[in-house]
Every structure is written in C-alpha cells, then in structure tokens.
Length: 561
Image (cartoon, rainbow, N blue to C red; front, side, top):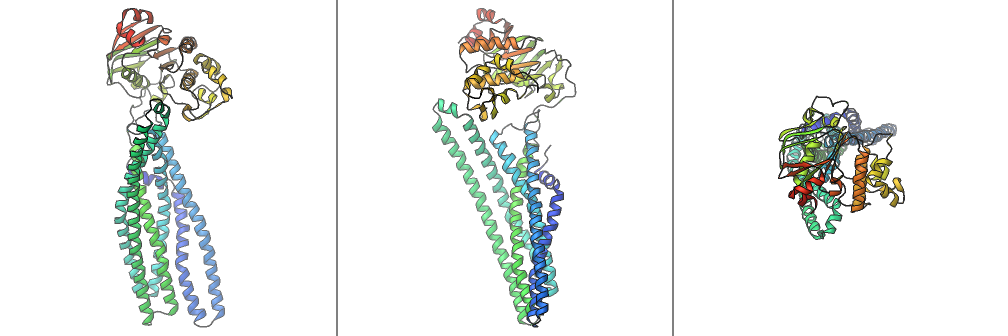
C-alpha cells in the first residue's frame, strides 16, 4: 500500500507538481535576476562611470531597478507556491497515514505506541512535505548557478569552466556528507516517536499510576526514554552541524578560487574593471546557491528518513482481510463459534441465538480478550470459524461487519466534546439517546454535571470518574443500536446497586436483539438467559447463572470470589 520511502517521496512531490513547477519557474527567475545584478553593475561601471556618461549610467540604473522589482515578485510568489506545496503534501500524507491507521482491517498499530503513530503523522509528514520546498529551492539555485556560469564564460572561459566543473564536485561532496545525517535523523525520529508514545501512555494511565504509587517508576522510565531521544537528537544535530560546516568551508574555498583567478585576469588586462566587478559579484552571489544546495541536501536526508518511516506504516499488511460476501439482510443476529482456537482458546464451540442475552464468563481474562478479538475481527482465529447468521466473518468486509456487530471493550475511550456527542458518536442521526442513557445509568451522570448532556468532557474522559466513564461508554454502545452487541466488563467501577440497575436496563433495552456480556459480574450474569463458562481455554459448561453457581466450583470461584 505504501511502497518504499522513495515511493512516498515521489508521490508526495508529484502530487504537488503544479505548485512545484510554478514555484521553480519563479524561483529560477529570481535566481537568474540575482545573477544578473553584478553583471548590470559591471556594465554600468564600464559604460557610465568609466566613460563619464551620465545618461548611460541612469539607463542602466533604471534597468537594475526593474530587475529588482522582478526579483521581489519572483521570490514572493515563488516562496508562496513552495510553502503551499509543502503544507499540502504534508496534509495529504497525514490523511493517508490516518486512513491506514483507522483501516477496518487494522494492523498499522501493531508494535507501535499511539504516540509514535502520532509523531509519524505529524513530524515525519511535515519533513516529507518540506522536501517540496527543497526541490523548488534546489532547481532555483541550479538555474542561478547556470546563469552565473554562462555569464562568467562570456567574461572569461577560465572563470566559467571553474564554476561549471567545480559545482558538480561540490554537490557530490555535499551528498556524501549528508549520508551520516540521514542515518542519524532516522534514529532521532525513531527515538522521538518512542518518547512521545511513552509520554502519551503515561499520561493516559496517570490515575492508575497514582493509585498504585508508581509515579517514581513512571518518571524514571520516561527519563530513560527521553535521555535516549536527547542522545539521538544531539547526534543528528552534530551530524547536521558537521555537514554544514564542511560544505561551508568547501564553498568558501571555491569562491576564493573564483575571486583569485578573476583578480589575476584583471591585473593582466584580460578583463575590464566592470568585468572584474561582475566576476567578484558573481563569485559572492554563488555563495548563496551553494549554501542552498547544502540546505537542500540536509532536507533531503531528513525527508528520506521520514519517508522510510511513513512507508513502513503505509505498507504494513492488514491484520484481517476483507471478503466479498455481502452482509446477510436482514441480520438475525446469530453468532456461532465452531472449533475456534486463538490465543488461549481451544476448540471453542459457542452459539448465541438471535435475540438471546448470553453471558460468557472466562476463568482466565486472557481467554476473554482472545474471544473479543475474534468477535470484533481484530484478528481471525487460528483454527475454526466465527459466523454471523451462518456466514463466516472472514467472508465479510470488516467495515460492513461492524455495522451489524459492535464489540464494546472494557477500556473504551471517550473523546473531547460534550456528553451528548460522546453518546451519539455511533448512533443513527435521528436517534433518541434518552433510553440508552437511562439503561446504562448515564442519565445520572448527566444530572450530576453542571451542563447536563451538554457538559464538556475532556480528552479520554479524564474529567469524569471511572464509573461515570464506564456508564457513558456503555450508553454509546447501546445507542449504536447494532443487531449484535458484545460488551466486556462494563460495570467494574460502579457500585452494586447501580450495577444491578444497569443489568436490568441492558436486558430491557436490548430485548429482541442479540447481546453477549463477557464478564464475571454476578449482577450482569444473573440478567442473562444463560451463561457459557470458559475454563482453561475450553467451554466447560453452559447453563443459567443460578444453575452454574450451584453445580460448578470453577464458576463460583470466578464469579463470586
């Protein structure tokens, strides 16, 4: 999907071809004009000052003024086109990264912290976008060098040849010097992304860390990660400083050589005073384009490193592939597992009939997590099949499947916005949210907040207590009104009275639609039609809650402990 880092760079710049070409033309005009300024000054000296012709001097000064006006407009609009290309390229890359991360097939998040993905979508995308401006600037600088070399050739073949032959050598040396910077930049971005990921992870779990008194360990962990990031950043900075210093020294020697040869030619009478002024002015002018080439090399090195990281995300294979079988219409809501093996699960056979409220109690929380991954198609089972109305989930498109089946996990996040917005996030546009809020107890949450359902909720729901967050998240899942709803431990942070009320509310709200409660809460399990016990990765028993309590020790130990 993403190809290599070079593919990412090529597509990013190619997508802004119009602005890059337009900006390059204007930039080339600006640089050509800059190269002509010392030439015009030399001509004014030869024809106006040396000959004492005031009229000729004024004419050439007027020409020089017109050139400066052109320079101003060329730089202004060329830079605007370049910045637009850079920002648009970065924006389109961010959209591609976000689209990949949120792809229904998943997989992009594997092995990457959320903060690391955020850094790739922001800093790396910005660096790749900046390559558009670097390309524009490089083309403009090359035209400036070419014009300067041609003018020097007309003035002196020797000076022209020095520039024409020396410039490629300088560019080649600059490219060699950029290689260490590219390696250091890639390491620096990788460490910075990891540090951002760790920081986001620690902030998200701040309440838990304070609750268990682990602040010191968390700070120590971030300090180590931040120190590694700082070391990598300093290494990249040293590499960039070394490259800039070496290129600047080589450029200075090159300019000094041009000025020395030009001075000797003037002393021998091979060129006029005005031509000497032009040659020296051009030599000084050449310093600008050559410095631009140094900057371009650094930008390209960092852009290549960032593009490689973006390509890794874009080319990550999806965790689950989409099938071509259409979703059953209407969806009756029968969920069936046949011989499912995944994680700790072994040969699990389980059926939730249409309209049934089924409880699933797992003695090992890892088995519950594995079951949820299969039901939500975050992963496909290693063996066996999961079916919806007789159709294997692997034959269905993941995005279409989730319009019928919703798996609300225990650690569901809330988003910055109002309480109403959070509950309505997945609900139909004209849905009445009140029944879902009442069933989940979220209506009580609204009554305790100053703004009611319009109260602002901070990022991640941190302005709410744990129990309030759970009730709002459950209300959101209920309001989505899916044919099949799978809920995982939705009431671990609420009191027993509220939990019992929520259990009755879920049953009443979901009447006639399939509901699977994966939990060890006796209040919730007592509200189900029957409970499936998963022990040691296998289905050990299936019966109403009261019967399992009476006859199964493992169930009593899991649910009543």
